[in-house]
Structures are given as C-alpha cells and as structure tokens.
Image 1 (cartoon, rainbow, N blue to C red):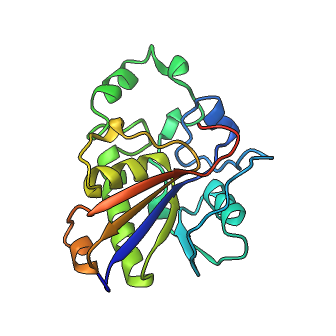
Image 2 (image 1 turned 180 degrees about the horizontal axis):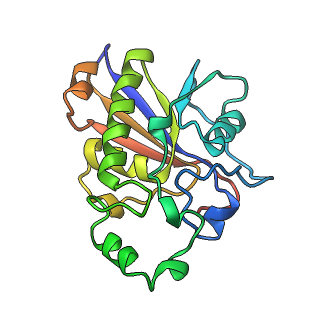
Length: 199
C-alpha cells in the first residue's frame, strides 16, 4: 500500500440561498458569517476546487493560508433561468416538471444538463491527479454526489447520497492507476465539519 491514493472531497459551507432552498448553481454567493467548523485532521499543501466564492471562502476557513487553485469545471450544475428560484417558485412550470423527471438529459433554460456537469467534473477530477498526489477538492453537492456515485466503494444512486454542507468524504484507492481506470475506491469515510448545524 506504499502507493495508496487518498482523495478528499469537501462540500462548501452554506450560503443564505442554500438556507432559503434556492437553486444557486453558478450564482456567486458568499458563505454565511459566523459558521463554526471542526479542526481538520487532513493536511495538505494545496487545495483545488470550484472557482466560486463559497468554495474559496470554505477553503480559507478550513485551511488557513494554504494555496487554492480554482477550476470552473468543479462548479455546480448551471440552473440557468432557474437560478435563485425555489421549488415553489417553479413547480407550476411544465419545463421544470419535465426536468425533475430527467435532469441527466434535460437542461434548465439557459442552463446545463446534469450529464454535462458530470462530464466536466470527471475531467477536472482526473486532471487534479496530474497536479496533486493526494487531491483535496472543495466543490458543490452535485459534483460530490456524482463522484461518490461513480467511485465510492458503496453503490448508491445519485440522489441517495446525503451530502450536507461542510461534509468531508475521504476515499482510498490502492494506487493511482486504479483511479485513472475508473475503479471504485477500496473504502471511504465521511466527517461533518460544521459544529452548529447540518445543512
């Protein structure tokens, strides 16, 4: 196991729109003030993640002073015209109801399908291995659910994964080749980093 690979996925801390249950895929909104987080055992010299401010601020709070490389391919799915709207705002729209039935293939108006999001996230994930030996990635709920669905040692459907804000998933592989070949990890663990709430 000398060549064992460890990958850490962290969902950003919550924003006001998250609390209000709004769709904020590419909306660039800061995290809530005053959030308390646990100390992290994970040590790293560099973080990689989404270019949106909520991920950068999460990195600054959890890994003070560690350099952050942003990559727009780690963004959440773009919800286009539905950004900053809630289920209640949209539930009467026929196009929204169709999208709920098939989000993998259908895209919101001026947004992207989940399949498009998954393709770019996978590309960014594999590229992270070219830059970092044991990547620590700070991203969003959709990308993390996709990566867990594809790589976790436990098989679950996309929406069956519980990925609260401030959750950290650590995945382990025997070697780098296994990751690049798309093999499921040998094991994984989850830790909740927020002290005062789970969202």
